[in-house]
Length: 289
Length: 315
Image (cartoon, rainbow over all chains, first blue to last red; front, top):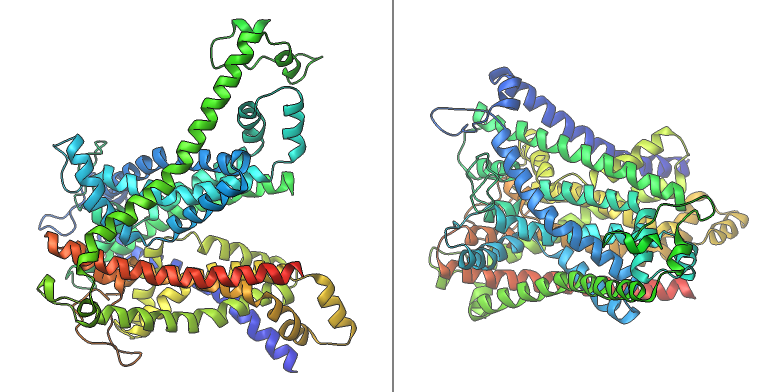
């Protein structure tokens, strides 16, 4: 009897995680449906003005999406090459001693709270950018991109490294014995073989960048606009949600429900990317494990 | 050979039937080309190391920057005072207490639930579609942005359950945020326990729960604890979900019970950063030093546990 009770209790613990997902979906979908009673779906998805908190309200999510994308693209430009090269270095070239220093450094980098990155962006990176480009404002997408990029280097590096390490040694030995240099082994044998795992790490890194909240709230500003200029202030989806929950918007109004609609959009985008990343991961695991 | 005519950077030659990879042609390369390939290899190695050190260098710059900004403000008064409108009188008493409360509560809530889930998935679960769904779901939850958990916490704990902006609402929100992280770490630790141990215990007539509690869990515990501490250090550094549940407000008291309002270090830091003025930035930096010191201490404990874990496994 006792055994069955324990088994049941343990099952409840595991099932709880499914309940969390159900809860997220129910809350987001429920409130978003109510939101769409007041705001047409088409206006939300295609509108180019986002001013729900102004007297004249516009509910086009594209400026927020563009802000998130601008920061995510900037962050990818920094983190994808650095993360990948770090992974190559750690798995192919670094001695045990160098690894012993670099791995913990990356782990610490991954463990630093995002609000600290925000502080670093605002008080160190932005002044530095202003020295180089004096017209840059206090809040700008570039500064946010740089810290978010640094923040996701550990994610990209550690997942890529796993993929690279899963490539059988025999492939490397074969190429080396045919006279290839170590660079040729890395770039033409190991990287192509680990490609699906590397792509998985890239997608996951970009998804992290889109979901990042505090650093972009602090450094990128609160100006929803469609721009490709990284020296200007933007507002990301996450930063908007923070802005509303900090303000005194009365609950139950359409302005307030925007956070659920934007949150739902954010959830869908990151979920798609995470699932895609999982697909690529499964592919390389199938091949080598 | 053909590779000498190839433009720089595209040394790859198309494979032929007798030479499927084009690699034997590389062997026949002439001497100057050989030297170029080697030089390119050295450059690549350099680029790799430079790229790798960027992470470490940024970490150093960040730490030094925060330290220089904040060390002047860090004194016993700063730790003992409440927040204030005046930067020179402000302290972190309330957020420091709040952080310890959140740490304890979140640990107390998330640890048993996560370990229970991990034990179920590794030791009890039948291999069927329900188990698969639970497993895939946990992996996906780990990738949900933390602010979405904040929205969930706001809707479910603060409003629906009527817990308000209380400690318990914050702890519950952070608990479900780190649940998948601890579950996955615990699963890995449980998986590392050799099967022979289980077989031996079953052979002696032990029940499933006896095997789990007396054999598997004790062996997996250091790994589980390491994962839990690392997940808790993430919870301690989280800001966005707690902003969502409305915890960012002026708090000049320490919480006495589960339903009290609270603030934590990251929230106080954010509140100071978002004010204009050098002096508030300086006390933000001082609070960051305290936060990082706390995280460092937690990580040190995790590393000690991990090293012990390694020894247990090699014996």
